[in-house]
Length: 320
Image (cartoon, rainbow, N blue to C red; front, side, top):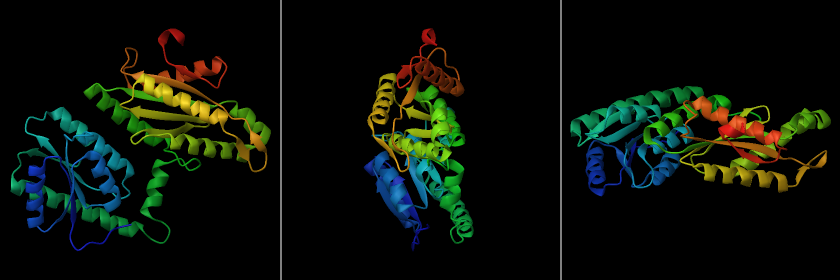
């Protein structure tokens, strides 16, 4: 829901006290309420809890880079918040393209001209006004914007992200990984003997298993991890900034938790459920595209099933 305020609010995510103070005074002088965050993590928290009208975000922050902050805000924010990114004068065009790819709306080089910054802020405030107007029209009884957004991004049965959203995020993360040479891991998971389970207990029981397994897996995700239902009984996890060791450890932890849990179905009693996992990492010589990263994880998953199921396999060209 919209937060009603006397003044329009700007969230300024900037780690330099001097620059934050100067920009803050300029914005306050123009009639805006200003809220400050010195780290990306704090900025994400305030964006979610306070719902500012716009965000001004520095690319360079002490904990998380501005691109990651922008992407996480886009994932979690109910109502679209226009974002203005601060960059250094020497910033090249590729950085700006990357910022726009993860959701920034405007760029402003530092040191900035006061009039230009206020003009860009005013422009983004007009965009925010249009968004609020559309939101108000959409909010009619139970038909809220949140419902529409969730339907567009999530799988209705499990509540996880859907395949369409996952593919979009995969492509964005792949571009950033290539640009900054950081690890990007992918895990494919599949419920063992799920078709036999459906045949024996029926599809409603199968749906129950999908929902329960999804809940368990979701609790193990970190901030920034992306888990989605890929199709049928398959799940996919994208792990930015995670090497092969970290991804394999997560897959093994999930495998053990599923195997060791007592799955008590309301009608059918205790059920035995296990998962098989395939793990792949980019950069890798054989992976040139985002789709190939998922394909390699899927090949490792196939190997896990061939080797007896209820296990984790890591993609290696010689083994698949």
